[in-house]
Amino acid sequence: MIRQLSIFAENKKGAMNRITQILFDAGINMNTLITNDSAEFGIIRMLVSDTDAASEALLAAGYMCHSDYVAAAEIGDECGSLNGLLSVISDGNINMDYIYVTYNTLSRLPVAILKATDLMEVEEFLQARGYKTLERID
Image (cartoon, rainbow, N blue to C red; front, side, top):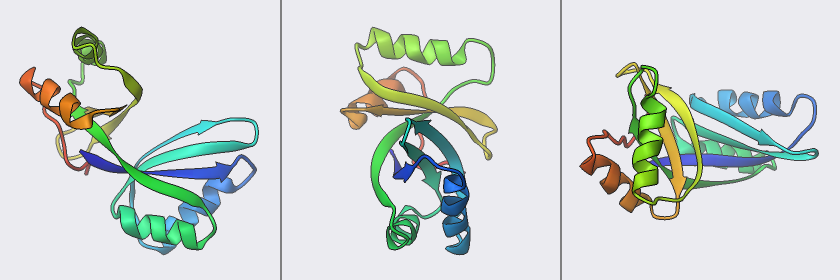
């Protein structure tokens, strides 16, 4: 499993830049970033080089954030790879909260990031079906 940082931020001009500046100043590298917004606030989810240091820096700057775990599974870089993973998950009757795709620079393969209730079960299930799960994204 991988630790993911989630930040609750106001949806206003320059908000992302302030967050990335805080992380830059703290020497934190962002490996993956995804945002979900609403009219007034948004959730920014990211995989970073040092989750604890990033959380400390953002909390000190007044942001609400927390870390949790997600599963990460490498998928192929060809048409239908994500569909294949989702079909396996569906066949296993696994309920996902959300999914997004990033990229592993070392293996040069896409990585599906999965949030579900029982992540250990998800990882074991995927490994048993030939998927490589990751403990970090580089």
